[in-house]
Length: 134
Image 1 (tube, rainbow, N blue to C red):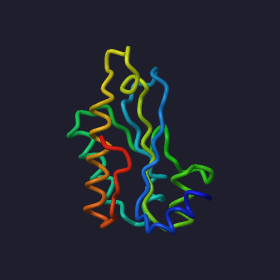
Image 2 (cartoon, helix red, strand yellow):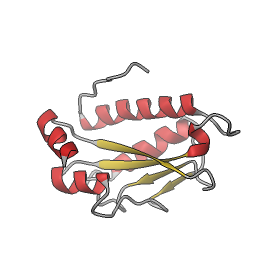
Image 3 (tube, helix red, strand yellow):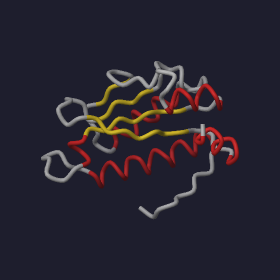
């Protein structure tokens, strides 16, 4: 509810909700769109996300399986339904985020997320203000 108030107050036009999955999962990233229902009709944005992640070397990708972000209590589904804007859930594998795993690539993940924010800003027209320098 607080995020929805923030979205409305600040004119936010897209939300990307970051999550972390267990390292045992074979995927590097699952992109949850609520089977397209959380995209406010902007299904082409899925291609933007997929292309961006692939360009940053995120190879094992899935769309909506096993994490669809379709349940009403998820951040993405709530924001999309309440605010009428596209919302993605990015479920990252712990192996990419935590030092000690052979696939550790935190800097690459951070660059991918930052690049994605810029691409979404361009496509949607949303001003994106960087709060923490990357």
